Length: 219
Image 1 (tube, rainbow, N blue to C red):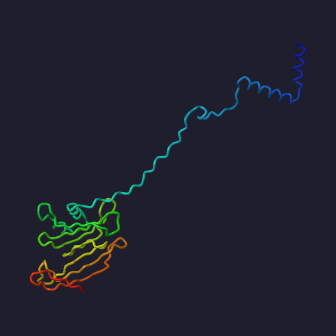
Image 2 (image 1 turned 60 degrees about the horizontal axis):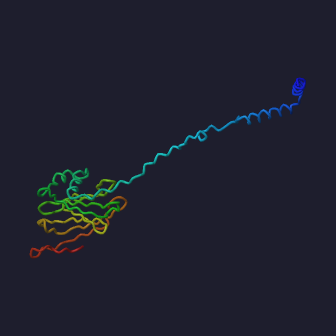
Image 3 (image 1 turned 120 degrees about the vertical axis):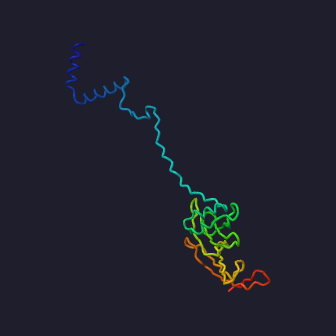
């Protein structure tokens, strides 16, 4: 046996490169049979760890501001008094006729094609109810903006089928306040973000008969 071992050693040393390679394969197989392992993926999935992808932060949704609530008479008064476009004279003379009743007429309607009703405010005298100034407010976001005003009395504005109709009484010398000699009726239409005059009619009144209101005659 001892001689056989010496012979085997000499055979290995004298063996070819092919024999050495064969021996290396044998060692590899032996390592596998004894529980050895090769390279493994040590990523988190193999360790049983949960992989959580960061969720994208929700983008803030674009919100459209709601239209303002149409003002009451008292709110319309405040709207006029807070309006920097309104003259100081109008603001100073805008006072209640009795208690907290102001001489204002407020109407709502579609004049400018906005998302909310437009507001027409007429200011009058307490005694004779003669229009002293008129304003149109358009909803812009959550507030109202002044888009029209006429502060040359006597004047009164109304909404007529989507148009703004402004009436201005004409007085001659000696005319009582209740009976003007005539009137101009001016129609404005909202065009390119402003009111444009589209029509004008002048009416002449005949003299009062029997104390009755004069009948208008159109030009």
